[in-house]
Length: 128
Image (tube, rainbow, N blue to C red):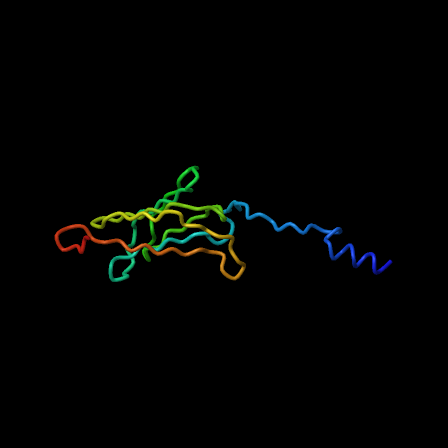
């Protein structure tokens, strides 16, 4: 009997052998944010109070936030979804990142971090 049980168990008869599909996980504002976007200038100095917008690539409502005094904007977004992230600040050219995948968080690292470097506007800008 034990042999039959072990044989059937090895074929996964008593449990599923299919791997779970990564489905979007909705975020709640109860815990830490699922995404932090830091906006910096060309020499990596944070740009406080810049505007950041996050929108799912496959549609859905966009979320906007103002960065804090450290240049960080916090978002509670679904994980397992690709996003477009746009950052704007006064006297800087806006920048958009596309197809940013926010993966399922790990307990040791529940927040994804993205840093966006903006280039200044004007005659002294190193615009390419």
